[in-house]
Image (cartoon, rainbow, N blue to C red; front, side):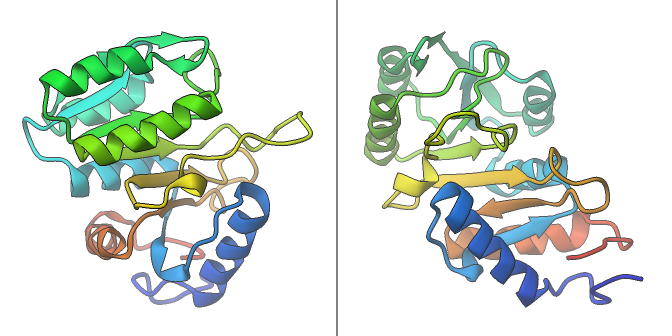
Length: 212
C-alpha cells in the first residue's frame, strides 16, 4: 500500500532520513526545509528547469553534455552556451570569458562525474566556480548522480557542501542504488526555491506516487 496517502505532504520521517544520509555520505549539513523529493531523477531535474528558467534565459552546459538534459533545457526554450572541458573538469578561463560577455541564468554541471568522461572538477576549480557564481549572480545546478560508487578512501566533496551563499541547487537520486518505485530523486536548495519547487511538484507528479 502507499506509505503516504497524501501525495502533497512529504513524509517528515523520510526527510529526516535523507538529512542524515546526506550528512554521512556527502557531508551536507542541511535542514529538512531545504529538501524536496520527486518520483525520480528525471522529474527532479525537469522541475528545477521549469521553476528556475524562462524562455531566452542563457544556460551554460559542458561542451560534451548530457543529450537528455540538453533536450529538457531546449524544451524550456533557453539559449544553451557550451563551456570547454579539460582534465580539471571545465575550463574556468573559458567560463570567465563567457560570463564577461553574457548574462547567465544558470550553469548545469555534473561536478564529480562529468558526462561522458566521468572527470571530476578539481578542488581549485570548485572554489573558483563558487566565487564566479556569486560575482556574476548565476545559479549552479549540481547533478550528483552516478557518484554513489566511489573507490577512493576519501570521496570527492560536492559543490553544495562548500556553498556558503546558497548559489548551488543540488540534485541526486537513488536510481543506481534502489529499484523502482524506491528510486526517488531529491533536490537540496534554499528554502524559498524549495517552496516554489513544491508547488510545481503538485502539478507534475503522478498520483500513484509511493513513499513521498
